[in-house]
Amino acid sequence: MLEVSHLTKKFGKVTANSDISFLLPDGSITILLGPNGAGKSTAIKSIIGFLKYEGSILVNHIPNKSLEAKRLIGYVPEFPALYPNLTVSEHLEFIARAYKLKDYKEYAKELLTRFELIDKKTKFGDELSKGMQQKLSICCALLPRPQVLLFDEPMVGLDPHAIKELKLLFEELKAKGASLLISTHMIDSVDTLWDETLIMKAGQVIAHVRKDELKQTGQTLEDIFFEKTEKELS
Ligand code: ADP
Ligand code: MG
Image (cartoon, rainbow, N blue to C red; front, top):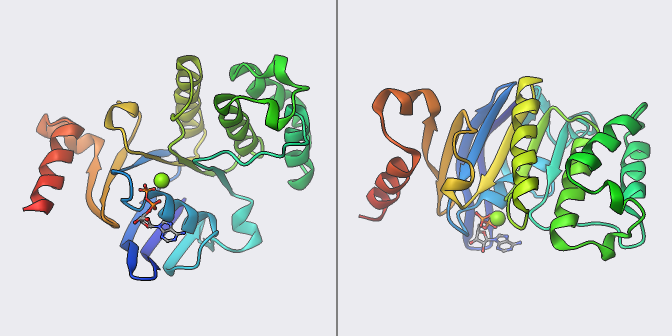
């Protein structure tokens, strides 16, 4: 479970996140949807503990910057940050050692197979294409089986097979009780995966859209997105 309360983050005069509050229950998928510059990456970087901010962020009731909370969070950054001198296999081994994982090899093999990286095991980080780097970055984040997963624009640069596999994984992780937060600027990239969508604009969450509420009103996410964003403009 992740609880974000009154998150505010300023970069000088720019308020990148303005009093944002939301809760990710166990076994749920939440989308952060908003145009470029809305503040999605800033919120994610605050949750992972990379930034200083005002407000409170708790992971299973523990402050996010504690070591205990950090072990519970997995993060897939928008731009993969790999080690040029480690091979694909060594990246996973490195994560396994850092997290003191036991019996990780089977899961590592499963992840590499699903993302079609198994025949790239001996390639170095800087020998991989952008899409392959993104896929390895996803495998690294998933290996410790985190309870809270943050994906920043995860579909960008992935091929259709990887997108399909990633969406399957999202649903499997949710079924196992994980809390997922996925940012995107593309409405149609998330189709029906989610339980709740937070629409962001200019640093604010301007709408919390719940899937079950949409079903009742017969509206689409797109309808609400344009209704809310246009209302904000007028
Ligand atoms: P998104 O991920 O939704 O595209 P960001 O969170 O990256 O948006 O950015 C939100 C706002 O914060 C933008 O106006 C951006 O220019 C600003 N911003 C983000 N990171 C920094 C930074 N390190 N320094 C200064 N301004 C930043
Ligand atoms: Mg971003």
